Image 1 (cartoon, rainbow, N blue to C red):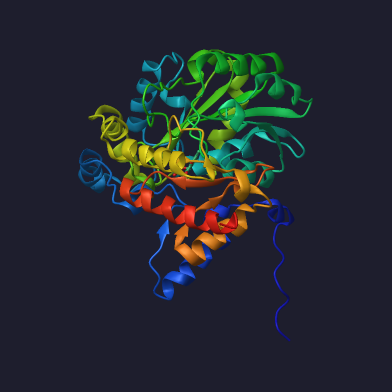
Image 2 (image 1 turned 120 degrees about the vertical axis):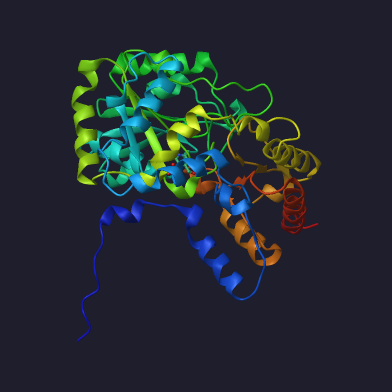
Length: 407
Ligand code: PLP
């Protein structure tokens, strides 16, 4: 008799991560058959020819003979000191090394922080669209995602009144993703002040995913949440993956701020959960100090004529020339989240469109509904390819949409 099939955790059926899901599997099949694809599904700088800056690479090479032991569960002391100084310089006076947690990417720390916080049935206020790991980690830590809308008509900015109306006796935290993946929205100071006030009124933790904190275009300026939050408990996340183009090194951090008594128990919980997994990947941690203290290598990419700036321009111009597309121009981050409008939008299904685009035009995008939105007329592309390649992608998208519109 064959062994009985293994059962898995039931709540996994509620979890989706379509950025690497069915469409990505189909893309691998097509590649195995010899097709050449343009894959825009993952914000993976290294896959598009970006390299981590040389001074970061050197820091790892120079430190490699010291990377054999486990480090402290919260991370290498020197890296944490450098991070604490960096965040103090950002206007967070209580950012000390003991309040810094280094993890295997922000991904691990998102999971850890929700595991530290949630009891079964607790609610987390999440943006819709979200980066889907936030929903997944909430669900897998027995919480319940409650979505506040960030609508295109409002430049993908949230409405604080709606956020406050969603607070219940079970709400524990508000998640902010700024600059935003997938929309590229960048939140103004007044909006953040209003959201901080809500967290203060209801005793909520602010979970601030700021992994794109230095990737901004044109006149957009990044406003971190923690300096505004002051005593209000806040965990600010960032890392080496995007701003420093070193996502394969798996280095992220979270900096805890807020009233010492209010955050004490949560701090201990994070430390304990960190200890249970011993420590994060050590070689990558050697690059943290270099990343914070070395030359700024992201601004030139985001300034006019810089590669990311020109990629964004290619997308914006392609959408402007399209008969079927609309776009809230991304102010920051590495993505655009266009919508399909007009005749092509009638009966439009983002999954069917993405599959058709893959099968007939060899382009892989992520359907918008993968980001936990109730509408199905959006898709996400990353801005990482060369600008000319992105122009070609949008020519192919237009062909598919022409066919769908019956032209
Ligand atoms: N948060 C956001 C908004 C992201 O877009 C990503 C990756 O794309 C992550 C977190 C995870 O980043 P990492 O685990 O590489 O630090």
